[in-house]
Length: 165
Ligand SMILES: [Ca+2]
Ligand SMILES: [Ca+2]
Image (cartoon, rainbow, N blue to C red; front, side, top):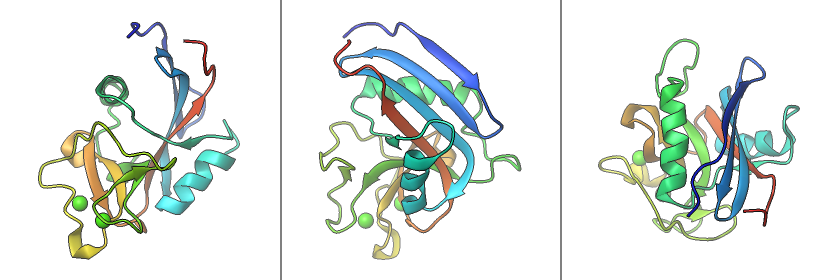
């Protein structure tokens, strides 16, 4: 695995941080983090696809521990794990759910995760109805299944140089 070559955080608007990361084995990804989105899971997918800043994104897929730690470190460095009045959501939607196949979580492309840093006591499928996964502020951005209707911030990704790594 190559080392990370480039990290750049650009605060282009008041509510989106762009984290550009190159040289993952699968290519380069541009991560866009919507920190004041406050949308449910369905609308989070739509925001990734149709936002005015960088359209054509998908919800974030985390393929490895390396990728997770990279994203997590950057988010914590920018205090994106802190819940406060400027960022009232309690977490960030990523592209993982068990809708229609309970306790069998799958990414948007249908694949199963190989790396699942769940928060303690999760996934707990509270009330039999927690089906969408967030990076949970309360657990230092570890993963939690939550109710898909809840309004949260959003992590998106886009392949920007597939096959180039
Ligand atoms: Ca569930
Ligand atoms: Ca849960």
